[in-house]
Length: 261
Image 1 (cartoon, rainbow, N blue to C red):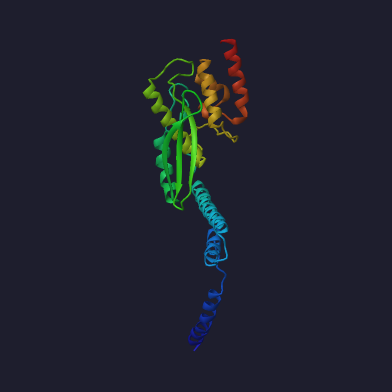
Image 2 (cartoon, helix red, strand yellow):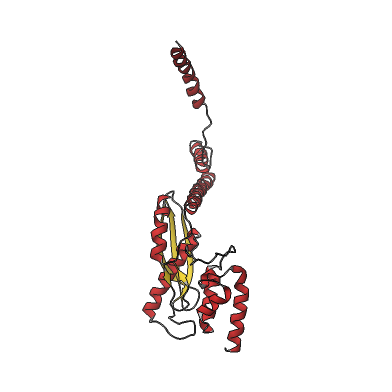
């Protein structure tokens, strides 16, 4: 009898639940609210065309804001699944470690595509002489696309001002570097060694990509031995230099450059 009572009780509750669900408020997006207003206005002969056009414009802007909100939500979700990526290559000039585009792509593509993103690259003229502007278009399944750009040198000149590659090679290198930098910038990806060769990792954040590039240029210009630099700051590679030591390192390298040592 107890089981029968339970069944009867559920049977009596079901209509009430359905009734409550039927009266639950419907949450509308901003685009849907404007669409309802426009639909109502179109059926009203007293509404003039100028007002209707303004309403349509507002509806289009609301639709774009909704798409951008979905883009941002998916970007946050994608970034929450992306961890630090270990370096897989070494710069022969500075002997610093970095992650190649192939390594970044193999780790990041499965994550960002699962969140509805796709990437495409292109180039356009740069306002900076002897540079090319590399463009990344990040498109989301909701319909929003965001454009990212970076200007890369393509003159084929090395840090000391001497030609180190042909124009064709320089253009290809600029494209490759630009794509790699943009991929890291878009998803705010950190690159570093997972294995610190037994050394205790510093709790301070390492230098940024821009700071690292500045250090590498000064190291080349001053003909500083990488081993001596790393030993002086007790690091395994230049990209592991703590950000708190950046000003000190730059100051010493510039002093060496000015002295011509």
